[in-house]
Amino acid sequence: METIRRTKIVDLLKRRDFGSMVNVKGWVRTRRGSKQVNFIALNDGSTINNVQVVVDLANFDEELLKQVTTGSCLSVNGELVESVGAGQACEIQARAIEVLGVCDNTYPLQKKGHSMEFLREIAHLRPRTNTFGAVFRIRHNMAIAIHKFFHDRGFFYFHTPIITASDCEGAGQMFQVTTMNLYDLKKNENGSIIYDDDFFGKQTSLTVSGQLEGELAATALGAIYTFGPTFRAENSNTPRHLAEFWMIEPEVAFNDINDNMDLAEEFIKYCVQWALDNCYDDVKFLNDMFDKGLIERLQGVLKETFVRLPYTEGIKILEEAVANGHKFEFPVYWGVDLASEHERYLVEDHFKRPVILTDYPKEIKAFYMKQNDDGKTVRAMDVLFPKIGEIIGGSEREADYNKLLTRIQELNIPMKDMWWYLDTRKYGSCPHSGFGLGFERLLLFVTGMANIRDVIPFPRTPRNAEF
Ligand code: 4AD
Ligand code: MG
Image 1 (cartoon, rainbow, N blue to C red):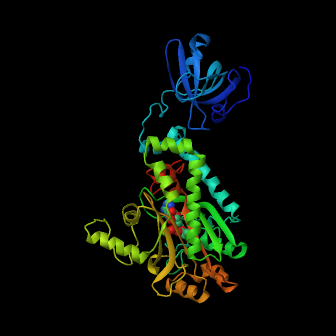
Image 2 (spheres, rainbow, N blue to C red):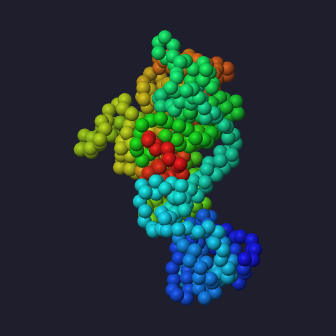
Protein backbone atom coordinates (compact mmCIF):
# COMPACT_ATOMS: atom_id res chain seq x y z
CA MET A 1 0.00 0.00 0.00
CA GLU A 2 1.26 3.46 -0.87
CA THR A 3 2.58 5.44 2.10
CA ILE A 4 0.53 8.54 2.84
CA ARG A 5 0.98 10.60 5.99
CA ARG A 6 -1.73 9.73 8.50
CA THR A 7 -4.42 12.29 9.32
CA LYS A 8 -6.19 12.07 12.68
CA ILE A 9 -9.94 11.78 12.24
CA VAL A 10 -10.57 14.89 14.33
CA ASP A 11 -8.54 16.89 11.78
CA LEU A 12 -9.80 15.02 8.74
CA LEU A 13 -13.43 15.85 9.50
CA LYS A 14 -12.59 19.55 9.31
CA ARG A 15 -10.96 19.28 5.87
CA ARG A 16 -12.73 20.40 2.71
CA ASP A 17 -10.00 19.74 0.11
CA PHE A 18 -12.11 17.13 -1.63
CA GLY A 19 -10.22 15.00 -4.15
CA SER A 20 -7.06 14.73 -1.96
CA MET A 21 -5.64 11.32 -1.15
CA VAL A 22 -5.59 10.72 2.61
CA ASN A 23 -4.67 8.02 5.08
CA VAL A 24 -6.51 7.26 8.32
CA LYS A 25 -5.88 4.56 10.88
CA GLY A 26 -8.37 3.36 13.46
CA TRP A 27 -10.70 0.70 14.78
CA VAL A 28 -13.86 -0.48 13.06
CA ARG A 29 -16.96 0.49 15.03
CA THR A 30 -19.52 -0.86 12.57
CA ARG A 31 -19.70 -2.22 9.06
CA ARG A 32 -22.90 -2.31 7.04
CA GLY A 33 -24.07 -2.12 3.44
CA SER A 34 -25.13 -4.09 0.39
CA LYS A 35 -23.52 -6.62 -1.95
CA GLN A 36 -21.98 -3.74 -3.93
CA VAL A 37 -21.03 -1.08 -1.38
CA ASN A 38 -20.06 -1.25 2.30
CA PHE A 39 -19.81 1.55 4.82
CA ILE A 40 -17.25 1.26 7.59
CA ALA A 41 -17.47 3.58 10.60
CA LEU A 42 -13.87 4.06 11.69
CA ASN A 43 -12.80 5.68 14.96
CA ASP A 44 -9.27 6.54 16.10
CA GLY A 45 -10.09 8.04 19.52
CA SER A 46 -9.18 11.59 18.53
CA THR A 47 -12.87 12.55 18.55
CA ILE A 48 -16.27 11.11 19.39
CA ASN A 49 -17.06 11.24 15.66
CA ASN A 50 -16.33 8.38 13.25
CA VAL A 51 -15.25 8.81 9.67
CA GLN A 52 -17.24 6.88 7.12
CA VAL A 53 -15.16 4.76 4.77
CA VAL A 54 -16.99 3.82 1.57
CA VAL A 55 -15.85 0.50 0.06
CA ASP A 56 -16.76 -0.63 -3.49
CA LEU A 57 -16.62 -4.37 -2.91
CA ALA A 58 -15.72 -5.10 -6.53
CA ASN A 59 -12.36 -3.34 -6.06
CA PHE A 60 -11.22 -5.38 -3.02
CA ASP A 61 -10.10 -8.90 -2.31
CA GLU A 62 -12.79 -10.95 -0.60
CA GLU A 63 -10.35 -12.53 1.88
CA LEU A 64 -9.14 -9.11 2.99
CA LEU A 65 -12.67 -7.83 3.51
CA LYS A 66 -13.52 -10.86 5.67
CA GLN A 67 -11.03 -9.51 8.18
CA VAL A 68 -12.77 -6.14 8.39
CA THR A 69 -14.92 -6.87 11.41
CA THR A 70 -16.08 -4.86 14.42
CA GLY A 71 -13.02 -4.05 16.53
CA SER A 72 -10.42 -4.78 13.86
CA CYS A 73 -7.73 -2.19 13.24
CA LEU A 74 -7.32 -0.72 9.76
CA SER A 75 -5.12 1.59 7.77
CA VAL A 76 -7.10 3.09 4.91
CA ASN A 77 -5.91 5.06 1.91
CA GLY A 78 -8.57 6.83 -0.05
CA GLU A 79 -9.97 9.95 -1.61
CA LEU A 80 -11.51 12.60 0.61
CA VAL A 81 -14.98 13.20 -0.82
CA GLU A 82 -17.95 15.32 0.09
CA SER A 83 -20.52 13.30 1.97
CA VAL A 84 -23.95 13.04 0.35
CA GLY A 85 -25.66 11.62 3.42
CA ALA A 86 -26.59 13.55 6.52
CA GLY A 87 -24.13 13.71 9.43
CA GLN A 88 -20.53 14.35 8.43
CA ALA A 89 -19.48 16.78 5.73
CA CYS A 90 -16.85 14.43 4.33
CA GLU A 91 -16.04 10.75 3.98
CA ILE A 92 -13.40 8.55 2.43
CA GLN A 93 -13.74 6.60 -0.81
CA ALA A 94 -11.42 3.69 -0.07
CA ARG A 95 -8.63 2.87 -2.56
CA ALA A 96 -6.53 0.53 -0.40
CA ILE A 97 -7.12 -1.14 2.95
CA GLU A 98 -4.57 -2.83 5.18
CA VAL A 99 -5.74 -4.82 8.19
CA LEU A 100 -3.28 -3.95 10.96
CA GLY A 101 -4.96 -6.19 13.53
CA VAL A 102 -7.78 -8.67 13.13
CA CYS A 103 -10.48 -9.00 15.79
CA ASP A 104 -12.47 -12.21 16.18
CA ASN A 105 -16.02 -12.63 17.38
CA THR A 106 -15.01 -13.08 21.03
CA TYR A 107 -14.55 -9.27 21.11
CA PRO A 108 -16.94 -8.21 23.89
CA LEU A 109 -17.89 -4.85 22.34
CA GLN A 110 -19.74 -6.27 19.33
CA LYS A 111 -23.10 -4.83 20.20
CA LYS A 112 -24.13 -1.50 21.61
CA GLY A 113 -25.98 -0.99 24.87
CA HIS A 114 -23.80 -2.79 27.41
CA SER A 115 -24.49 -1.97 31.05
CA MET A 116 -22.01 0.20 32.97
CA GLU A 117 -21.50 -2.72 35.36
CA PHE A 118 -20.46 -5.01 32.51
CA LEU A 119 -18.16 -2.37 31.04
CA ARG A 120 -16.42 -2.03 34.43
CA GLU A 121 -15.55 -5.71 34.21
CA ILE A 122 -13.82 -5.02 30.91
CA ALA A 123 -12.18 -1.77 31.96
CA HIS A 124 -9.21 -2.68 29.75
CA LEU A 125 -11.44 -2.34 26.66
CA ARG A 126 -14.04 0.22 27.67
CA PRO A 127 -12.05 3.25 26.42
CA ARG A 128 -13.00 1.96 22.95
CA THR A 129 -16.67 2.74 23.54
CA ASN A 130 -18.13 6.12 22.61
CA THR A 131 -19.05 6.81 26.23
CA PHE A 132 -15.66 6.13 27.77
CA GLY A 133 -13.82 7.76 24.90
CA ALA A 134 -15.83 10.91 25.67
CA VAL A 135 -15.27 10.66 29.43
CA PHE A 136 -11.50 10.19 29.16
CA ARG A 137 -11.07 12.98 26.62
CA ILE A 138 -12.97 15.25 29.02
CA ARG A 139 -10.79 14.01 31.90
CA HIS A 140 -7.67 15.06 30.01
CA ASN A 141 -9.12 18.44 29.12
CA MET A 142 -10.11 19.16 32.71
CA ALA A 143 -6.58 18.42 33.90
CA ILE A 144 -5.28 20.98 31.39
CA ALA A 145 -7.90 23.50 32.55
CA ILE A 146 -6.76 23.10 36.15
CA HIS A 147 -3.10 23.71 35.37
CA LYS A 148 -3.98 26.69 33.17
CA PHE A 149 -6.24 28.25 35.79
CA PHE A 150 -3.56 28.20 38.47
CA HIS A 151 -0.61 28.94 36.23
CA ASP A 152 -2.35 32.03 34.81
CA ARG A 153 -2.91 33.28 38.36
CA GLY A 154 0.68 32.84 39.50
CA PHE A 155 0.25 29.65 41.53
CA PHE A 156 3.11 27.16 41.55
CA TYR A 157 2.51 23.45 40.96
CA PHE A 158 4.08 21.81 44.00
CA HIS A 159 4.70 18.07 44.25
CA THR A 160 3.86 16.62 47.63
CA PRO A 161 4.87 13.07 48.61
CA ILE A 162 2.76 10.00 47.93
CA ILE A 163 4.38 8.04 50.74
CA THR A 164 4.03 9.79 54.07
CA ALA A 165 4.37 9.24 57.80
CA SER A 166 1.55 11.58 58.86
CA ASP A 167 -2.24 11.39 58.62
CA CYS A 168 -3.43 14.78 57.32
CA GLU A 169 -7.13 14.29 57.82
CA GLY A 170 -6.59 12.40 61.09
CA ALA A 171 -9.28 9.96 60.10
CA GLY A 172 -7.03 6.91 60.24
CA GLN A 173 -8.09 5.71 56.81
CA MET A 174 -4.61 5.04 55.47
CA PHE A 175 -3.10 2.23 53.42
CA GLN A 176 0.17 1.10 54.94
CA VAL A 177 3.38 0.95 52.91
CA THR A 178 5.80 -1.74 54.00
CA THR A 179 8.41 -4.17 52.72
CA MET A 180 8.26 -6.25 55.89
CA ASN A 181 7.47 -9.95 55.78
CA LEU A 182 3.90 -10.02 57.06
CA TYR A 183 4.30 -13.61 58.30
CA ASP A 184 7.14 -12.69 60.57
CA LEU A 185 6.52 -9.32 62.23
CA LYS A 186 8.69 -8.22 65.14
CA LYS A 187 6.70 -6.94 68.09
CA ASN A 188 7.66 -5.29 71.36
CA GLU A 189 6.50 -6.41 74.80
CA ASN A 190 3.19 -4.49 74.38
CA GLY A 191 2.44 -6.33 71.16
CA SER A 192 3.06 -3.29 68.94
CA ILE A 193 4.89 -3.85 65.66
CA ILE A 194 8.52 -2.66 65.54
CA TYR A 195 9.20 -0.80 62.32
CA ASP A 196 12.96 -0.27 62.82
CA ASP A 197 13.84 -2.80 60.14
CA ASP A 198 11.14 -1.65 57.71
CA PHE A 199 12.17 0.18 54.53
CA PHE A 200 11.83 3.67 56.01
CA GLY A 201 12.58 2.62 59.57
CA LYS A 202 9.14 3.85 60.64
CA GLN A 203 5.49 3.23 59.91
CA THR A 204 4.49 4.80 56.58
CA SER A 205 1.33 5.05 54.48
CA LEU A 206 -0.05 6.32 51.20
CA THR A 207 -1.09 9.95 51.54
CA VAL A 208 -4.73 10.94 52.09
CA SER A 209 -3.98 14.57 51.14
CA GLY A 210 -1.03 16.74 50.16
CA GLN A 211 -2.29 19.64 52.25
CA LEU A 212 0.17 19.65 55.15
CA GLU A 213 3.16 19.71 52.81
CA GLY A 214 1.24 22.16 50.63
CA GLU A 215 1.05 24.53 53.59
CA LEU A 216 4.83 24.38 53.94
CA ALA A 217 5.09 25.50 50.33
CA ALA A 218 2.38 28.20 50.55
CA THR A 219 4.13 29.80 53.51
CA ALA A 220 7.23 30.11 51.32
CA LEU A 221 6.10 30.51 47.68
CA GLY A 222 2.86 32.35 48.49
CA ALA A 223 0.38 30.44 46.36
CA ILE A 224 0.70 26.81 45.34
CA TYR A 225 -1.44 23.92 44.21
CA THR A 226 -1.01 20.18 44.23
CA PHE A 227 -2.61 17.80 41.77
CA GLY A 228 -1.98 14.14 42.38
CA PRO A 229 -3.32 10.79 43.51
CA THR A 230 -4.57 10.37 47.08
CA PHE A 231 -5.68 7.23 48.87
CA ARG A 232 -8.36 6.47 51.43
CA ALA A 233 -8.93 3.09 53.00
CA GLU A 234 -12.50 3.95 53.94
CA ASN A 235 -14.92 1.13 53.41
CA SER A 236 -17.41 3.29 51.50
CA ASN A 237 -19.23 1.53 48.71
CA THR A 238 -21.01 4.55 47.26
CA PRO A 239 -21.23 6.09 43.78
CA ARG A 240 -19.08 8.97 45.07
CA HIS A 241 -16.14 7.27 46.83
CA LEU A 242 -12.94 5.77 45.51
CA ALA A 243 -10.04 4.26 47.44
CA GLU A 244 -7.66 5.95 44.96
CA PHE A 245 -8.69 9.35 43.64
CA TRP A 246 -7.00 12.50 42.37
CA MET A 247 -7.16 15.72 44.29
CA ILE A 248 -6.35 19.35 43.49
CA GLU A 249 -5.31 21.32 46.58
CA PRO A 250 -4.55 25.03 46.30
CA GLU A 251 -3.05 26.69 49.38
CA VAL A 252 -2.62 30.46 49.62
CA ALA A 253 -0.76 32.63 52.13
CA PHE A 254 -2.72 35.67 53.40
CA ASN A 255 -6.10 34.38 52.16
CA ASP A 256 -8.89 34.28 54.72
CA ILE A 257 -11.93 32.09 54.42
CA ASN A 258 -13.77 34.62 52.23
CA ASP A 259 -10.86 34.79 49.77
CA ASN A 260 -10.85 30.99 49.87
CA MET A 261 -14.53 30.83 48.95
CA ASP A 262 -14.01 33.35 46.14
CA LEU A 263 -11.16 31.24 44.77
CA ALA A 264 -13.17 28.02 44.97
CA GLU A 265 -16.14 29.53 43.18
CA GLU A 266 -14.04 31.13 40.44
CA PHE A 267 -12.03 27.92 39.99
CA ILE A 268 -14.95 25.58 39.64
CA LYS A 269 -16.79 27.90 37.27
CA TYR A 270 -13.65 28.18 35.14
CA CYS A 271 -13.48 24.38 34.91
CA VAL A 272 -17.14 24.05 33.93
CA GLN A 273 -16.80 26.80 31.31
CA TRP A 274 -13.71 25.03 29.96
CA ALA A 275 -15.67 21.80 29.51
CA LEU A 276 -18.35 23.64 27.51
CA ASP A 277 -15.77 25.51 25.43
CA ASN A 278 -13.31 22.69 24.76
CA CYS A 279 -15.23 19.42 25.02
CA TYR A 280 -18.57 20.35 23.53
CA ASP A 281 -18.89 17.33 21.18
CA ASP A 282 -18.21 14.93 24.04
CA VAL A 283 -20.40 16.75 26.56
CA LYS A 284 -23.21 16.93 23.99
CA PHE A 285 -22.88 13.19 23.32
CA LEU A 286 -23.18 12.39 27.04
CA ASN A 287 -26.06 14.85 27.37
CA ASP A 288 -27.99 13.18 24.55
CA MET A 289 -27.14 9.59 25.55
CA PHE A 290 -27.57 9.57 29.31
CA ASP A 291 -28.43 12.81 30.94
CA LYS A 292 -30.67 15.22 29.04
CA GLY A 293 -30.24 17.87 31.74
CA LEU A 294 -26.43 17.91 31.70
CA ILE A 295 -25.70 20.97 29.55
CA GLU A 296 -28.47 22.92 31.24
CA ARG A 297 -27.01 22.04 34.66
CA LEU A 298 -23.51 23.13 33.60
CA GLN A 299 -24.81 26.44 32.27
CA GLY A 300 -26.92 26.86 35.40
CA VAL A 301 -23.89 26.69 37.69
CA LEU A 302 -22.12 29.35 35.63
CA LYS A 303 -25.03 31.78 35.98
CA GLU A 304 -25.62 31.39 39.71
CA THR A 305 -23.77 32.99 42.60
CA PHE A 306 -23.11 30.24 45.15
CA VAL A 307 -25.04 30.55 48.44
CA ARG A 308 -22.74 31.09 51.46
CA LEU A 309 -24.28 29.82 54.66
CA PRO A 310 -23.05 28.86 58.14
CA TYR A 311 -23.52 25.20 59.08
CA THR A 312 -25.78 26.23 61.98
CA GLU A 313 -28.19 27.92 59.54
CA GLY A 314 -28.06 24.88 57.27
CA ILE A 315 -29.06 22.63 60.16
CA LYS A 316 -32.02 24.91 60.92
CA ILE A 317 -33.23 24.57 57.32
CA LEU A 318 -32.89 20.79 57.46
CA GLU A 319 -34.68 20.60 60.82
CA GLU A 320 -37.52 22.68 59.37
CA ALA A 321 -37.72 20.30 56.41
CA VAL A 322 -38.02 17.36 58.83
CA ALA A 323 -40.69 19.23 60.83
CA ASN A 324 -42.59 19.75 57.57
CA GLY A 325 -42.58 16.03 56.86
CA HIS A 326 -39.45 15.57 54.71
CA LYS A 327 -37.96 12.12 55.34
CA PHE A 328 -34.17 11.69 55.54
CA GLU A 329 -32.52 8.33 56.02
CA PHE A 330 -30.06 9.78 58.57
CA PRO A 331 -30.93 12.01 61.56
CA VAL A 332 -30.41 15.79 61.53
CA TYR A 333 -29.21 17.71 64.60
CA TRP A 334 -26.55 20.31 65.43
CA GLY A 335 -23.20 18.53 65.50
CA VAL A 336 -24.00 15.84 62.95
CA ASP A 337 -21.67 15.21 60.01
CA LEU A 338 -24.01 15.89 57.09
CA ALA A 339 -24.87 12.99 54.81
CA SER A 340 -25.02 13.39 51.07
CA GLU A 341 -28.85 13.43 51.21
CA HIS A 342 -28.73 16.46 53.53
CA GLU A 343 -26.25 18.30 51.33
CA ARG A 344 -28.30 17.59 48.24
CA TYR A 345 -31.51 18.73 49.93
CA LEU A 346 -29.97 22.14 50.60
CA VAL A 347 -28.65 22.44 47.04
CA GLU A 348 -31.34 20.81 44.94
CA ASP A 349 -34.54 21.38 46.90
CA HIS A 350 -34.02 24.41 49.10
CA PHE A 351 -31.68 26.85 47.32
CA LYS A 352 -31.62 25.29 43.83
CA ARG A 353 -28.00 26.35 43.34
CA PRO A 354 -24.56 25.46 44.73
CA VAL A 355 -24.06 26.13 48.44
CA ILE A 356 -20.88 26.83 50.39
CA LEU A 357 -21.45 25.74 53.97
CA THR A 358 -19.08 27.30 56.54
CA ASP A 359 -18.23 27.22 60.24
CA TYR A 360 -18.78 23.54 61.04
CA PRO A 361 -18.56 22.06 64.55
CA LYS A 362 -14.90 21.45 65.33
CA GLU A 363 -15.57 17.84 66.38
CA ILE A 364 -16.42 16.76 62.85
CA LYS A 365 -13.53 18.58 61.14
CA ALA A 366 -9.76 18.13 61.01
CA PHE A 367 -7.33 19.50 63.62
CA TYR A 368 -5.74 22.15 61.38
CA MET A 369 -8.81 24.36 60.85
CA LYS A 370 -8.90 27.88 62.30
CA GLN A 371 -10.89 27.95 65.52
CA ASN A 372 -13.72 30.48 65.83
CA ASP A 373 -14.14 32.60 68.95
CA ASP A 374 -17.31 30.70 69.96
CA GLY A 375 -15.09 27.75 70.96
CA LYS A 376 -17.43 25.38 69.13
CA THR A 377 -16.93 25.90 65.41
CA VAL A 378 -14.06 26.17 62.92
CA ARG A 379 -13.56 28.15 59.72
CA ALA A 380 -14.32 25.23 57.45
CA MET A 381 -15.97 25.55 54.05
CA ASP A 382 -17.51 22.74 52.00
CA VAL A 383 -18.80 23.44 48.51
CA LEU A 384 -21.95 21.43 47.85
CA PHE A 385 -23.11 20.70 44.31
CA PRO A 386 -26.25 19.41 42.62
CA LYS A 387 -26.23 15.63 42.13
CA ILE A 388 -22.82 15.36 43.85
CA GLY A 389 -23.08 16.74 47.36
CA GLU A 390 -19.60 17.72 48.65
CA ILE A 391 -17.31 18.54 45.75
CA ILE A 392 -14.79 20.69 47.67
CA GLY A 393 -13.64 20.64 51.28
CA GLY A 394 -11.41 23.35 52.70
CA SER A 395 -10.79 25.91 55.42
CA GLU A 396 -8.84 28.80 56.75
CA ARG A 397 -5.97 27.24 58.73
CA GLU A 398 -5.19 27.73 62.40
CA ALA A 399 -2.22 30.10 62.29
CA ASP A 400 -1.75 30.43 66.06
CA TYR A 401 0.97 28.11 67.38
CA ASN A 402 -0.53 27.58 70.83
CA LYS A 403 -4.09 27.00 69.66
CA LEU A 404 -2.89 24.51 67.07
CA LEU A 405 -0.67 22.69 69.55
CA THR A 406 -3.52 22.45 72.06
CA ARG A 407 -5.83 20.98 69.42
CA ILE A 408 -3.17 18.45 68.36
CA GLN A 409 -2.77 17.38 71.98
CA GLU A 410 -6.54 17.19 72.56
CA LEU A 411 -6.81 14.81 69.64
CA ASN A 412 -3.78 12.75 70.74
CA ILE A 413 -1.99 13.26 67.44
CA PRO A 414 1.63 12.09 67.92
CA MET A 415 4.04 15.04 68.07
CA LYS A 416 6.76 13.00 66.35
CA ASP A 417 4.63 13.27 63.20
CA MET A 418 3.83 16.97 63.52
CA TRP A 419 6.93 18.91 64.57
CA TRP A 420 7.71 20.07 61.04
CA TYR A 421 4.13 21.22 60.48
CA LEU A 422 4.14 23.21 63.71
CA ASP A 423 7.35 24.93 62.58
CA THR A 424 5.29 26.93 60.03
CA ARG A 425 3.44 28.49 62.99
CA LYS A 426 6.65 29.00 64.94
CA TYR A 427 8.65 30.75 62.22
CA GLY A 428 6.79 33.66 60.65
CA SER A 429 3.28 32.29 60.86
CA CYS A 430 0.69 33.89 58.60
CA PRO A 431 -3.02 33.59 57.95
CA HIS A 432 -3.59 31.17 55.09
CA SER A 433 -6.31 29.07 53.52
CA GLY A 434 -6.82 26.29 51.04
CA PHE A 435 -9.14 23.59 49.83
CA GLY A 436 -9.27 20.23 48.09
CA LEU A 437 -11.31 19.49 44.98
CA GLY A 438 -11.92 15.82 44.26
CA PHE A 439 -11.02 15.52 40.58
CA GLU A 440 -13.43 12.63 39.99
CA ARG A 441 -16.26 14.48 41.74
CA LEU A 442 -15.68 17.37 39.31
CA LEU A 443 -15.72 14.87 36.45
CA LEU A 444 -18.96 13.35 37.72
CA PHE A 445 -20.44 16.81 37.50
CA VAL A 446 -19.19 17.76 34.03
CA THR A 447 -19.84 14.36 32.42
CA GLY A 448 -23.15 13.66 34.14
CA MET A 449 -21.99 10.07 34.78
CA ALA A 450 -23.85 8.49 37.69
CA ASN A 451 -21.01 6.50 39.28
CA ILE A 452 -17.50 7.67 40.20
CA ARG A 453 -16.14 4.31 38.99
CA ASP A 454 -16.95 5.47 35.46
CA VAL A 455 -14.86 8.66 35.38
CA ILE A 456 -11.46 7.12 36.28
CA PRO A 457 -9.86 4.57 33.95
CA PHE A 458 -9.14 1.88 36.54
CA PRO A 459 -11.23 2.41 39.69
CA ARG A 460 -10.03 1.10 43.04
CA THR A 461 -12.82 0.38 45.51
CA PRO A 462 -13.23 -2.09 48.38
CA ARG A 463 -12.56 -5.62 47.09
CA ASN A 464 -11.74 -4.37 43.63
CA ALA A 465 -8.26 -3.77 42.21
CA GLU A 466 -8.44 -5.50 38.83
CA PHE A 467 -6.17 -4.33 35.98
O1 4AD B 1 -12.84 16.99 52.45
P1 4AD B 1 -11.53 16.29 52.24
O2 4AD B 1 -11.26 15.06 53.02
O3 4AD B 1 -10.43 17.41 52.50
C1 4AD B 1 -9.08 17.24 52.49
O4 4AD B 1 -8.50 16.22 52.19
C2 4AD B 1 -8.34 18.51 52.77
N1 4AD B 1 -6.96 18.16 53.15
C3 4AD B 1 -8.40 19.40 51.57
C4 4AD B 1 -7.71 20.71 51.75
O5 4AD B 1 -8.21 21.56 52.49
N2 4AD B 1 -6.58 20.93 51.12
O6 4AD B 1 -11.37 15.94 50.69
C5 4AD B 1 -11.43 16.96 49.72
C6 4AD B 1 -12.28 16.52 48.56
C7 4AD B 1 -13.73 16.22 48.91
O7 4AD B 1 -14.49 17.40 48.95
C8 4AD B 1 -14.14 15.32 47.77
O8 4AD B 1 -14.42 16.07 46.59
C9 4AD B 1 -12.87 14.54 47.50
O9 4AD B 1 -11.80 15.29 48.01
N3 4AD B 1 -12.89 13.22 48.16
C10 4AD B 1 -13.08 12.06 47.51
N4 4AD B 1 -13.30 11.78 46.22
C11 4AD B 1 -13.46 10.50 45.87
N5 4AD B 1 -13.39 9.47 46.73
C12 4AD B 1 -13.16 9.67 48.05
N6 4AD B 1 -13.06 8.65 48.90
C13 4AD B 1 -13.00 11.03 48.49
N7 4AD B 1 -12.75 11.61 49.69
C14 4AD B 1 -12.69 12.94 49.46
MG1 MG C 1 -14.61 16.77 53.40
